[in-house]
Length: 209
Image (cartoon, rainbow, N blue to C red; front, side, top):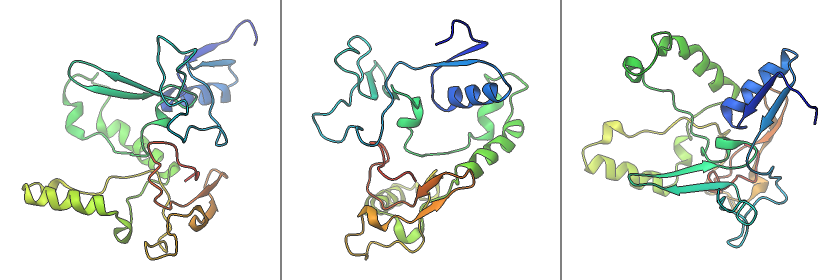
């Protein structure tokens, strides 16, 4: 490591990673600090006995990627590894509602000001909703429950940063097998694969979709 930097970025999640990248592109010397380790597909936790939980008080023995804290009024799950919140957000990409900016924000920060950037992020992440024929049973149960409770108009599929293959169906032989993932190259030139509905969105998808 060098002895001095132009910028030190604390955290490697969405905000930190993008800020560090843009500053480095401008020629600055940038240091990114993260409290957890870098996980590779080969050593990512999968089994019950693997390192899942991060304990801020005992990082030498509990240095997984999930920092789960129980507070008085809520429970908070956050990432604790290279990637930060990217590791825990489950691919959900929802724009903030316009009325949220009516109070508590500087006048310069408005929905209209941010909307072009919401759209840009959506294009870069290839944001889309799950195809109607691929919704799982739990989705159908939740929709039915919402309708019976009178909230049917509020229920809907959320935008996801996941690429779906429209030809994938539950009728395929062994439908959740990784072999059904369709490889492609995204607009940024990175190799990815389409979703096979393994259910590992929160735990780390084995397919880079």
